[in-house]
Amino acid sequence: MDDTMRRNDRRLSAQLTNEILEKGTVCQLALAAQGEPYLVTMNYGYRESTLYFHCAAAGKKLEVIEQNNRVCFTVVEHGAVLPAEKPCDFTMKYRSVVGFGTARVIDGYREKCEALGIIMAQYAPGETFQFPEGTLAATTVFAVDISSMAAKSNL
Image (cartoon, rainbow, N blue to C red):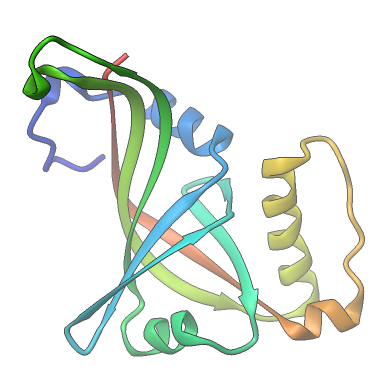
């Protein structure tokens, strides 16, 4: 867990943190290289303290990861906006995870298939998929090994 959370009264347990990541559908992945931030929104898969992603074989995110493989991520489960009489009293119901980790490209046919299976299981649990060799060759798969994370809730 990460100890940088200001509102400890909203901190969630490790079990609930994992639940959010297991049920989530969208991950914001923050990267940085040469002093410039770069944020991408991606589908992902989660298993055992690792996030899995896929992308084209070339592109900016891979260039940035090659320069600096340290990343930050967030997954948010939105609830509802709760209006109030005063504008500054509005709030939102949510659960979210913020974490840090190290990205690494996954090579090898078997390893890529396993990682893509984890990603697909995020959206189609219980299904099994075959990944054509041509598609695998044109796809880059990378993992983020999570070094720390924390979740909070305002439900």
